[in-house]
Length: 533
Image 1 (cartoon, one colour):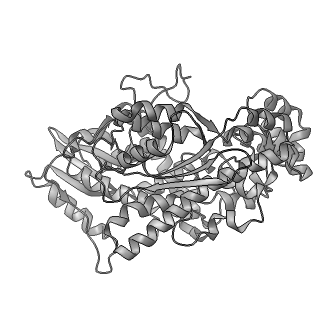
Image 2 (cartoon, rainbow, N blue to C red):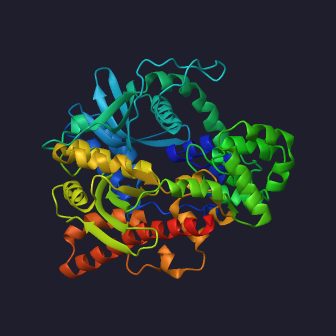
């Protein structure tokens, strides 16, 4: 029996034909990171709100007795609802034609027909309404600001299926959260969502849809695994769940050209297709050397390959010493933890805004002194924990001391947001921001590289590379339920609904996790002093 093509199957094929085949015939070979609970919740919340955008709505979703989706019943229910002139909005409206199926997130009745609204829980970019579109054969004159490619595939596919069903369509739209929306008073759904007219993009893409549907059906008709090589679809528009399987299938070693620091996947592919995969091969290839010498990050990749091939740490004492000599004590090691909500929950905040809920401080009075530790965790029942964090931060950090962070863009952004939100604390918060020193700098500049870093300078890679045998610096050994930033972000909002005993334990877990972040910075700094001598 032929396989029915759905939206998800169609977009999987557009990303990579083999990806679609694997999803159907060998799904057990997929390797996907678990979707964070917060992301699943965000998708559900945004979807439910979008249904209410036009007011009253009817949901065409139908279920079988076992709880699975009943497509046949949905198709019938959709036709019944569309035939009723009083029904203006149908959610999950189902259609099937030419071996294809889709359920439209929001189908809205307009004069002369129906409009498709595809809902995404992401925030809208600054799309240009009057950009110049171009097809594959026409060079682009400028970089276009437009929705992600997968959204274009998705909506074009839906339009094609509905037209095959004889549905008169008046428009195709993308619904996303408006990143500039600020919650002030009650939630305003009309302002929360950004509606983007996809007509021009769909007009270019839709003529290709029948061709790709036919090719997808051809792929699924085969029982033998396709022999497709690695391609751009391994990483775009999303990392393919079968990427690791295909890397092993094509005997790509680890590490390889795909692991080089900030080397784009499409660039790495060009060397892979020429048979250049190992660091040895790359070091000896004239074209790679020429390419690498023309990029700003090339010294790091050279260091990465050299360290790995020789199995040694590469240390530039002069660069490390120059960094250390600029430090002024006391040093306040700072790290924030935050929460994000797709739908703003606190007044004055935006969709997906990173809202600080806690911080840890380790204070070093001199290079040789032991540290004082301060910490703060806001009340999860607070009307806005960001205010509590900002106030306590100004008490704990003077406005004229060195503040050390790891990857300063995050902390600087949070401090600026708090300064803008609270004018009475603005000067102090901005002074803290202006005195930040980034501990990432010596690693990013190639002053210290260990092959165990694997081409990444995140603190979660640098720390175990520098201290591979210290269980106290292993986040996995933390007691309790918080071992990474994602877990910290997910659990904070839940605390308001916990029993007193559960809340007390969770607070302890959150504080221990954040404390390790700043203690890690202390020991990394000590390591830099040690190797520089």
